[in-house]
Each structure stands twice: as C-alpha cells, then as structure tokens.
Length: 160
Image (cartoon, rainbow, N blue to C red; front, side, top):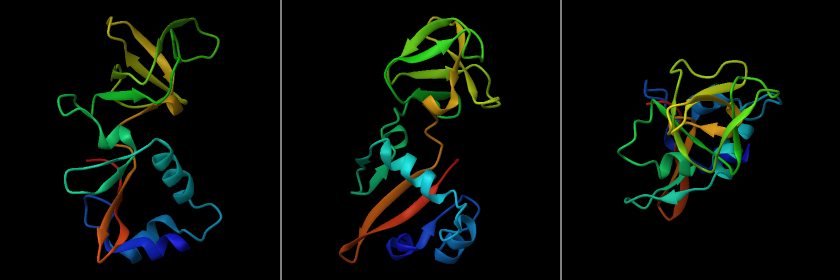
C-alpha cells in the first residue's frame, strides 16, 4: 500500500510501545480488503487539520485545536451544523436541541451505546446524539512531520 511509503520508520501507534512500520502493518493490514485503516484515516483527514507549534501537521481539528481548559475525557464535539440532540437514543424521540460544532459534556462516561452518545447540554439537560455526529479529541488522529525534506506520518494513534 502507498501509505507505507510515507510512514516514519518510528511511526507511533500506541502508548504501549507498538511503534514502527512492521507494527503498523500488523495492526492495520493495509492491503486487506477489510482493513479499517482507510475509513479511519479518511475520517480523521476529512475533519480538517492544523499546524502545531513544532510545524507538525495534525488532523483532525477535533484533536489539533481542542481547547486546553476542557477535559478531553469527559467531552465531545459535534462535527456538523444542526446536529440534533434527542430526548432518548431513538430517531423517533423528540428533538430537544441542536449543536453547531459545539463542545458538550458526556452524560455517560462509558461511551456510546447502540450508535448513540449521551451528552449534557449547557443547560444541564441530558440528550442523545448519533455517535457518528460527535467526536472525542482522543479518537484516532494522525500527525505529519517534515523529515529530511519530505512529509512523513509520525503518529497515527488514539487514546491518551
């Protein structure tokens, strides 16, 4: 796969020491038809990016531009305009609010359930949002650094 040509030899993949090109191939199986690499990478890149203070290019913006004063473990950001917040985890439930690229608290720190994420609105009211429409800054992210005159992926990681 072409992605292997742009990996840093020491590409960081986890916080447990699983780093490097061979670990990347084992983890992501980029040539396999059912590899999750392409959807995961495309999602991160599609959400925009920015440069950090060291000149590294990082995506998505939900990681690279996350405000330092907001806990990344207990908040998510809506990744669109008019994201409907429902009274229950059901498409038929009443809409109790909408989010426009807003950061909201998680009402249930155990994560998503059946494709829904429980969130706490600024009013304190709890609602439910389709999990595909919110993102944690700790979800998969990718960083590019210029080394020896060429851009390389130096991390592709999730978590903390």
